[in-house]
Length: 410
Ligand SMILES: Nc1ncnc2c1ncn2[C@@H]1O[C@H](COP(=O)(O)OP(=O)(O)OP(=O)(O)O)[C@@H](O)[C@H]1O
Ligand SMILES: [Mg+2]
Image 1 (cartoon, rainbow, N blue to C red):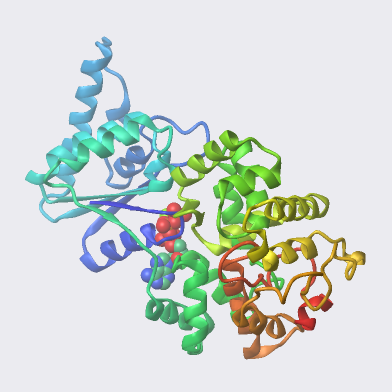
Image 2 (image 1 turned 180 degrees about the vertical axis):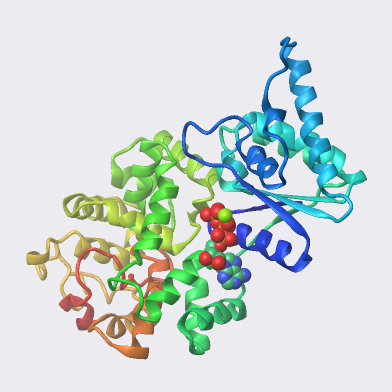
C-alpha cells in the first residue's frame, strides 16, 4: 500500500492507525533527509527491528558482479521479511520514501512483487510533492502502479466536520462551526496546519501571528525550491493569492519566462494549484520573507502595472489597495491620488465589496479568550489580497499593523 500526500496531510498518522488497528506485529523504517545515511537505511531499520542478522548487508567474501550481488541481496531481504511474517502476519512501514536512496526504492519494488504470496503488509508513505528530480522513486512508482498487489492512496485534506473534531481535540472545547469552517478553508483541511492553528486558538502557542510551527513547515517546503522560485513566490505572496504571471513579472521586474519557469516549479512542488497558492497559510508565511522596502516597491509597481491595463477603470479598487500598501507607515493619507475614503479623483467609489468592509472591524484590537478565534480565522480574508477576487487582507503576518486608520475609514 502506497500512501501519498503533501507534507502534514496525515500519511504517517494513517500508517500508524493501520498498524494499531490491525493489531499485527510491525516494523518501521524511516528514510531521512540527513546526509550520510547508509544505503538501504529504511530497510536496515526494519531488518534490525525484526531481529534479522546484519550480515545480510555484507558483500560476499569472493566479491561478485554488482547486478548479481544486488539481486542476491534483494532476495535475501525479501525472504527475511516474508519469513518474519510467519506464522502471524507482519506490517512493515517505510515512511518518507521521498528521501529514500535509489537502492532502497528498487528493493521496495522487488519486495512488492513478492508480497502477494505472503502474510506481509508493506506500507510506503511519500510526499508526492517532492518527487521532482528523484528518478529512482518516480520509476518505482510507475512500476508499482501496474502491480496488482499494490494499492495507492492519495490523501486529501480533512472535511469541515473532521477539522472541527480535530480542533475540539486540540482545544478541549467544541469550536463553533463557523470557526472550524474558516480554519478548514484557510488550511485546506491539512491536519498539521489545523493542529497548529488549534493550538493558537487554545492559547498554547506563542505569539499572535502565524504559529512558529506553520512558519517553519512552510519555510521547509520553500527551502527545497530553487532560489529563483523561492524569491518569486515570496514576492508574489505579497501581491495577492492569485498568481497572474504577467502581473507578477511586471511587479517583480522579472521576465515572463522566469516567472513561468518558477511557477512550473512551484506547481510541481504542490505549492501552487489552479493559479493560486495551494494554502493561504503558505502564502501568509511566504510573504513574511519580504522586507518592508521591497514590499512597498512591489505594491507600487503592481499599481503601475494595473493602471496601464485597458480595463484600469474597473480596477480602481485594486489600484487603490496597492497604492495604499505602497505607502510607508508615515505616509498614510498621501496616497498618490487615493484618499482614506477609498475614492480617487475623477472616479466613483472603489469597488471594495461589502464582504471586505465587513472584515475590517474584526481585524482591529486584540481580543482575548474565545474571541481570539477571530484572530485565528482572520486569515479567511487573506485568501485574497489586493488584486485578487474576494478581497480582504490577512489580520496575520502582513507586516504592517492591523490598526491602520484607512481600514476604519471604510
Ligand atoms: N485525521 C487526523 N485527525 C487528527 N489529527 C491528524 C489527522 N491526521 C494527521 N493528524 C495530525 O497532523 C499532524 C501531521 O500528520 P502526519 O505527521 O501524519 O503528516 P504527514 O503527511 O506524515 O507529514 P510529513 O510529510 O511531514 O511526514 C500530526 O500531528 C498528526 O497527528
Ligand atoms: Mg510523515
